[in-house]
Length: 375
Image 1 (cartoon, helix red, strand yellow):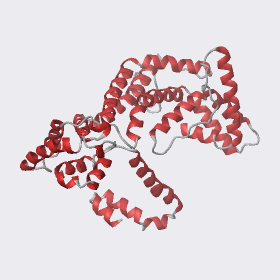
Image 2 (cartoon, one colour):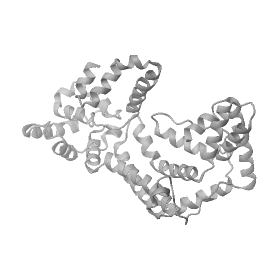
Image 3 (tube, one colour):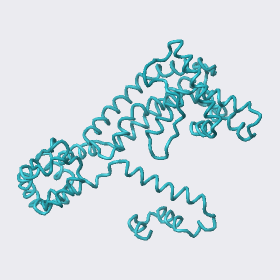
Image 4 (cartoon, one colour):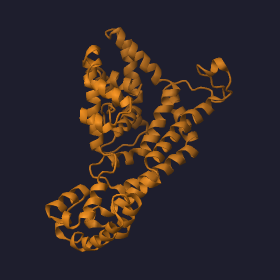
């Protein structure tokens, strides 16, 4: 629904102009009443942010811009709904979006999304950066878990009070929190005697936060965090500040025992002693910031052969499945190929196309490498 609202409001220059005018009037009103801060760079009159297909930070920006212009958007939708020159279809879309926008459910979920995405925003941006500071990213995971848990334990009443104040400000009906909650299923079966407040607290608020915590635990469990922390000992950033022979040996013995034999482990330790003097303190390696740059420099200087075991370990670490902006661009390209092109093709052609064959092979659990080779 949020995307629908953005599409309607930003769909024409007329509605965009109405939004800017309405937002300007609203800002002037808030400044006069002292409800918003004043200063250089504050209270800019801008447009709504569209959510991107793969950039999760853009979703947070979209939520923020919609909250900032909530009253102005209502004015634009009401104007478009009452405009005689608008088509019946556009008036219908505006009416549906306005009805959703002025519902307690929408306001509650909107501000809940704002809370959760605000907590995860720093980690999102850290994982999207071209050169990831893994150690700080893992520290962010720990702080995000703690902040989400704190929000779950203590944040519901604060959020509910704030949502109610927003609803009062824009004349949005507030349900009786002590009344019995009934939806399309429960109203018929009448088996759950829960209150409206219980529904918003446990079915929506807690469930959304629990899902985020579960995702963080799944993607960054203890083994993954330890692997990423130990791998930072190889990074050349800040003149190999985190270089630690003991951590590198622990990395190999814990996570790559199948790639290094017992004899190779002994030689690895010897290579690391020489590597610490020959590479870590060498002037040609002081301007590097990523493992990939280090890998290239080792090859260019011929030291990849002298320190073959260390070079092998660096190559293994470079294959770690860490989310970056590169993977996001890959997903974006896949979406373009699968969705954009598919919409332009006839169904009869798709039935025999390579895309459908690939999807069928995936469904039948065919080996991924074979599918890629065939493609």
